[in-house]
Image (cartoon, rainbow, N blue to C red; front, side):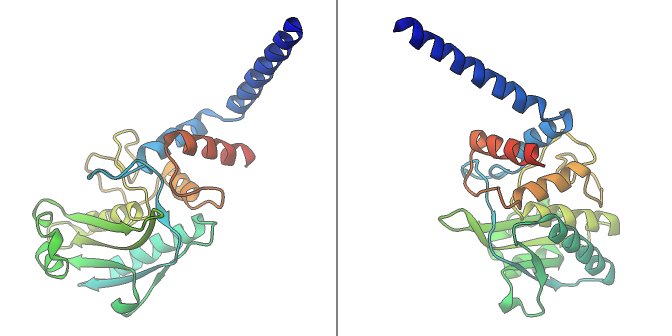
Length: 232
């Protein structure tokens, strides 16, 4: 009986090992990098003591653009919005509204001083930042409102476009920075890139994938990401 149990246990271990090997071999080097980068960027926030889990919008993001928007930045945001909507496949979308009372996200394009008059709690941050974002989530870790600003006085036109893309994209729930990919919009060093790197697009796509869930820690999100990427 003992020998039979030992044989069953041994076969189970071998089967489990083969299954794990098969799973790992199904992922290429780039996909493994995507998983690692997702865990770096999408879990928690750069500041504060919030838990390191996945968070995102589960409702339509209705954006009002205030301050002193110019044609270049309005065109740029439309480009960003279109790209995000194309990457999200779980029903999420970004729309623009003309009435701030109908919005749940406010983009302010102007000076830090004027931004702080609308959002006085952020007055301590504007002197040292050309761009900022803040998002708020409920007990289910779903974002329900937020706001951001781009300083159009201190930043030049290209830097303004970069900040608009970076801060807004981080407001989706990709809130961390990393030094890993220089071309990434999430690069922790100062850059002025105005396009998503391929890996950035994968992070947006995976966070707003139908099989992705809110509230996943590093271990659980690793498993979900592997399942998504293997199934594609």
